[in-house]
Image (cartoon, rainbow, N blue to C red; front, top):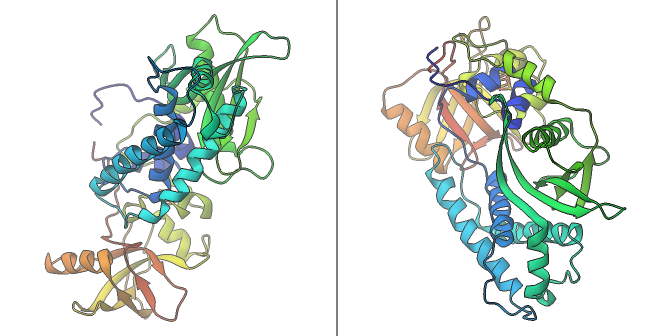
Length: 381
Ligand code: SF4
């Protein structure tokens, strides 16, 4: 494989690799990216917090109040629009959900509430926060969205916030904070978040040898809870994983599981989940399911389709026919996709992603994907 530069391990790529090495390998193949509403909402909140931490307050009176709610609104409106543009420009995207904006505003308020609490702001009600109080918050923020790279260049990360705070004895300590906009943990931190926080913490400590004590925390905007990790040093394990993640021509073995495959973006290129599904190792739950099928008939006007399930033969993506036929109703982008595929003359097998199976007729719409089944068994890079 032609690699221009040494690969790097980030918390995201490491977590992917731990979930399923094939998922990591596929993520490096330059396949069409997929956008998701939850990720866009999270990015809009992150970028708004960053903007507010770096807000230029030059020339403003310390006593001024009533300005922060408007600044918060402006930051979110700006970042929401920017995220919408990125989302719509991403090759694979469902429908943009404008009605999630209020949820993003609530998430931002939750994140700011944690920030003000962790920086001991004298006033935490947004309309009453003075310019002087916000200046003090800003002074405690040492860095936002900061790139971290280990001494060897192999490990990398981007930390959300680095804060300075006095410990119980009044001595300085640093807080490495990662803002989370998903569900808070019920008890201890999720293994993936714990690994991510420790990696940020330890790369930071390595790159700033004169650092005071450093504490790593996950901040959950949904309930404003703060979860700290005190796990052991992690750089040696990360370097070991980096070695295992060296790019290869052939794909590494997949480790399909319900957790790893549920939100995997590369199912259309991965034969392994379909084998696991047909062998009963993965059981679809809930209202949505994925399928690999042959299109038997399509009424292009109405979106009524008849599919035949195509079970795997072996583990490399080959398929066979079956007696299992089912009807489905397609609409919106799912219908556009299948029409496009049919018009292109491609009559090969199809991957149906997120088909709604809660009613007697399967439905595919703006939330679904219809793509050619394209098992990838050789690196494209
Ligand atoms: S679909 Fe499942 S088995 Fe395939 S790459 Fe994704 S996580 Fe791995």
